[in-house]
Image (cartoon, rainbow, N blue to C red; front, top):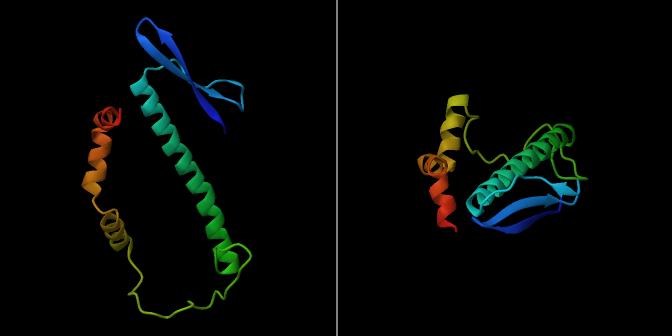
Length: 124
């Protein structure tokens, strides 16, 4: 969806609004620059998560039916292409520990969200 940022000079400074070519109208209230940065970041994250959920459902369904999520391809559902031993299947608790480990530093990520305003202001 093409979306543009419009600006307007006001006595308080420059204000912004977002304009959508899909609905041919504004899609935000009047905001200052920091608010605009936050709004656009939240929208980008929201769109990415929605896209991920749509994509992953299709990939999982293709893998269930075709043995692979790759478009136009299929493989046997009766075994892996390589029987390299990568370990036993993980329990739910082990999976949570694994996900925490591969996030590279969960505390650092959580800190980013706690200090959201500071991060936004640093990028100005």
